[in-house]
Length: 250
Image 1 (cartoon, one colour):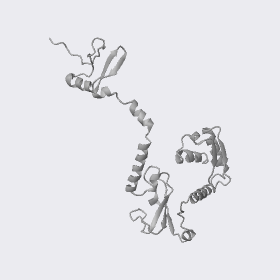
Image 2 (cartoon, helix red, strand yellow):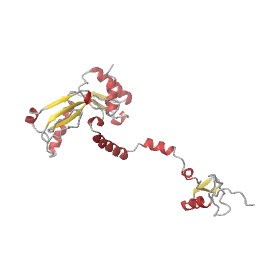
Image 3 (cartoon, one colour):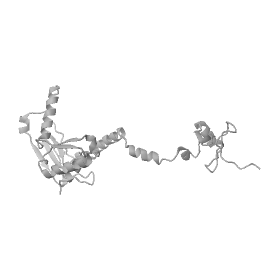
Image 4 (cartoon, helix red, strand yellow):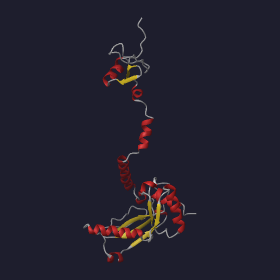
């Protein structure tokens, strides 16, 4: 019963890929869960429901495919002259770490309340986190796992502000076009906001905008309690404009 949920989490929630066809039509499944045939069947059904002509294969070494890919990337970087940051096996053997999973590690930034794990590693120059709910001494660094979004990597409100600023920069760089269209579609016309029609008729059925200077003159010289105005067809004289109706002077 749980297998059909996996593709939804992988492609939609974690991958944020709403249009699966945008990824192509060839899919290679990898990961430690794919030796389970129920998971493979759920993946194939989900993919083919989105991409009917999709070609789906399971990696020969599905559980180790991620490590193989990381090794290939490391080999390419080393071939390009990029220095490795690997500290060596001696450092790994002497590495000290402590894992903590408790009520204090639960993420409360949203309603999901992810059950996180704090992995504290002893390293030279570690800054520690004495202010944390799970205090960490100087000389230690913390790695957070079990989160489902970038917010879960943070404990402090100041760190959260930095992340929000980054998200806002992404929103400014990639605006929500649907929200922009909705805002513009229901935005009142400009002449209604200013209380002046700002139009004149050149010929029956054809209109053109008045200049901003003329609109200012109309508002200052012909202010009236009602914003409605009658437009005269510009066949009498070229100087006829949209003027508010006035009662005749007795």
